[in-house]
Each structure stands twice: as C-alpha cells, then as structure tokens.
Length: 264
Length: 288
Image 1 (spheres, rainbow over the protein chains, first blue to last red):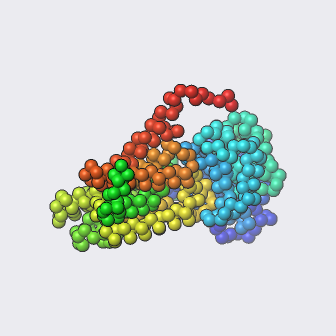
Image 2: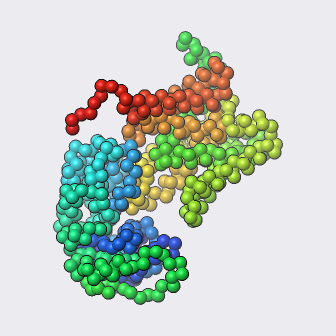
C-alpha cells in the first residue's frame, strides 16, 4: 500500500484519504486527471460516472495496484483497507468452498502462516450469517448464483473488519432483493464509523442510499453531497467527456481541480 | 501372480532406483501440476519443458551425460525463458502465452542444434525422453532435494498460492506476495521439470506433472484433496509404468506417462465430475 508522504499540512481533522493533484492512468494516458480533495472519515461515497471515466482506476490506485502518473495521495496511517474487486476477477470454477473464500478475509489477521483460531472460524460463520448465507459454508463456489456469490464476497469484507472499504461495482448482475440487503450492510458499516467508497451505476440508488458522491469523467466533475453532485447538469457534462485516447493529446498543464463541496 | 508385481523390484537394483526416483518425482511434481492446472497454465508447463532443453544440452556438450551440469544448465535456461517471457508480457503489448511460445520455440531449436553438434541421435533421444532405468546416485539425490524444496515451499506458501489462483486482485490488495508467489511458483515448475528430465526426459516430465492433476479434478473438489489424489495417481502410474516397461520391454518414461494417461481416461469417463456420471440412470434431482 503506497502511503505517499504527506506534502501538505492537514487541512481538516485527519481525513481517511487525501488526494493531492492525483493523476492515474495507463501507458502515460491519464484515466483520471488532477484529483484533489479529501475523503472524510465515516463517509459513504458513491463513485459515479460513465464507463471508462476512471472509477475502477481510482480504486485500484488507492489499493496500490497502479502507481500515480502525477500528484499523490495519502491514506491515513491508521486506516486498514478492504477491497472488493469486480465480480469478473474471481475464478468461479476454482475448487473451493464458500468458507474458504470468506476466510481469505482473515489475511490481515493471520497472514501467510498464522493458524486460523476458533474465534476466526466463528468470525467467518458469523459473517456468512450476516449476509444471509447461513449453512452455505461448505458449498462449492461453482454452485452459487451470482447474487449468492456476491453475498459471500461481502462476507469476506465483513471478516476483513477494515475501517476503509472500497467496493468496485458490487451491484452488477445482482437482483433487487440482494441489492437491498447489501445496501443495508453498507449502511451498517457507515453507522459503525467506517469509510465506504462504492462504484455505482444506478443513479436512483445513489440518490436514495449514498449521502455523498464523486462524479468522474476522466477528471473530477463534482464531489460533495449527492443532491448537489448528481444533478442533470453535471451528468450532462460527464457524458460529454472524450472516451477515446487521443495519441496527439497535448501534455497536460495543471488546470481543472475540484474540491469536495463545490462543483467545478 | 504377485511375483509379476514384486519380483522386478526385488531382483534388480536399477528397478528399485527407478521406482524410488519415480515415486519421489510424483510426490513433488503432482502437487505442482495441480496448481499449474488451476492457474490455467497447463500448456505453459509444456512450453517450459521444451525451454530447458538448450541448458541441458549445453551441460551435455561440455560434460557429457552428467546429471549435475545438465541440471544446472536446464535451470538456467528455464529461468531465462520464464523471466524473459514474463518480462516481455509485462513491458510490451504481447500477452504471456505468445511471448512464452516465442521463447520456448527458439530455445527448443537451439537445444536440438546443440545436441546434434556433438552427439548422435541416441544422445538426443536420451535428453528428450530420459531413462528412468539408468538413474544414478547423483540423480536420485537431486530428485530428493527437489522434492524436499518443493513440498516445503508449497506448505509455506499454500495460502498465497490458493489466493493467487482464486482471487489475484484481492491478494494484491492485502499482500505484496502476489508477484513473489508467481515467480516462486514458476521456479518450482522449472525445478521439477529439470528433476524429471533425467528420468523421463525434457518432453515427458511435464506429463507426470499435468496428467495426475488433470485426472484428480474429475474426482474431488478441494485443492488439498486434489494434491493428495494426484500424488496417489502419480504413484500408481509410476509403479504400473515401470512394470509395463519391464514386462513388455517398453521404454520406461513413455510407459509411465501412458499409465498416467490411462488414469486420465478412466477419470474422464468414470469420475463424479466426468462424462458418464450424468448419464447413469436412477439418480434424479432432489426437490430442494
């Protein structure tokens, strides 16, 4: 986890993550330009934007899977991170049981070699109960439906017991009842004071369940309370972004910045 | 009757050594094969087995049929091809399957050219197909060391190996071990192929790795059980292959791999996850 050294003095009371002119991308092409701002502790933020707007890229950057092309970000030292990759990253044909998948969440506690203690096993079965998969522990992964598998992956997040939770498109290919249950879990995490960032496509869901939103379109369009962020005008601007890479695009000069709480 | 199975091993020391070597190889290579298959890299194992040829050939050219130099040469060639192919995949637009294919094909042809520079086709046959019946002390010790290193590494890195197959992005989010495990694992593959080539040859040693693992997949549904079953199938194939070779005067390496192939065919047909089970009458579905 790259915890880049803070360049600036704390602006607010120690946010969970501070972005400082962060640019992330691939092969020199920026997928997100110049993100600056703070992600407050205990906030529940929806990451919104068209396909290719840099939402997953931002999450991968925070996790440390991508190195910044420019700028930096700082994850507060006391933050432990749980990351839920997109559905498609998991090999469903792998010969494992549901509880093996969930027990991966013990990694931060037990590491490579630590034995799983009885209380760890209790944690795993408790998490399965919490996501509504009681009795599924011994089922092979390839017998689960898409929704059940997503519940199991949420159980793994529960077991990780992290205070910063990053979820990449957790509601894809999941039915309404499951979405309701997963939203309830997410709101429970927020009530416990955890910081949650979730990539979401369903704007109605964003408006109804996420107090804050960050609207991306290869650059931050708006960031703040959902009602002020996910507006028709902002969405229109987000849709106009250029999806294709332009190989002749000029090299970037520091320009557009967005801070939470106001539109650019 | 029992004589048929036991006499060859009690009467001939070379058969005992062959059996010991083949059993050790099974103990080591079969679990590696399970992970190779689960990572969808079965054919990469085959490519690597070709790739070690020029190294073995260089050892052979300089020192003759000596196990230690040929082994070291094989390890170097295998490491070069694995890291070269991996580096091309990471640094360029090319995917690892294509770069691996390019590297191993060049490597294989260099190896064949090198062997033909000096040896007769008998030498080439030896390097390509091995002679488990001629395992000497040095070879047995080498196989023993490789087995120990492999089993200890797999035991130590078990959790990371499983996580890397099942959910690699997740592993990278909680640990820096992802990349380490990938290269450690490739190292184990090369090590086991090199250990196997004296007995089975460069081309066939991958057979003992993949066939028992692929067979086990039809029977069980947990990684640990697959490893145990694959080792068992490897043991059975070693034993029956050597007996087949002894009684029917077949070359020993291919006889072992053919036995493993028979186990694969049987598993494919009869295993609970195989072809025939769904066709059996009487088993209907439950109501819930």
